[in-house]
Length: 264
Image 1 (cartoon, rainbow, N blue to C red):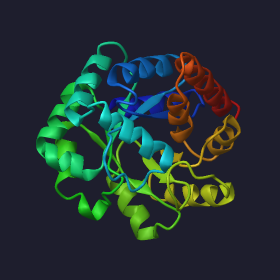
Image 2 (cartoon, one colour):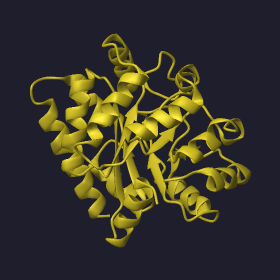
Image 3 (cartoon, rainbow, N blue to C red):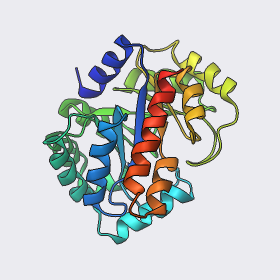
Image 4 (spheres, one colour):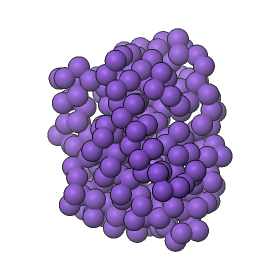
């Protein structure tokens, strides 16, 4: 059983939903990212998702795009992110998931990436621009290495696509709550509930919902529907605002999000 699977199983046994916190690795520096990960893991985040900065992040809104630009300017690379993950693994057992666009992995080398990611203590991989029918090379390599590949579904996904993702996704399924980019506003929670229910017809793999979750109130409502709540832009925005209190504000906001999921 992978670390991700064990975490969802443990939370389910306690009647809890997972809070998945997204940070852009290297924004504003990898040292600060490592500190943020440790603090969030201690104060409510059940899973940490680390964005790998990329020059053309098609799925991301302006908040995360700007974070990626800052991370690239600070010299962040996939190799350095894996080194940070290795350091983190000596200090915490929180599951770590990388969100990386396919070109970053292709340039690194698919087999080498899967091997090195697992050796560094990474548990899962999300590739937002790689649907299941284009995952023929990396998916078996990841499976063999013990890296959970997490696929995405959207409101427009067909039943065929839902079944394909349900069959291949490991750790959890990432349901994108709206047809748009990260940071957009989540408005139709009834539609989210309907689609999550449809996905569950195909699998017992946990379903986590992301995109548009900005407040503890949003987190509470989504936690009533899904097995996990993914929050990204709202956390990245706190980092972008900077200041000496950024870390404390991240911790306070994360606590409020986790508390909201417990109230669901």
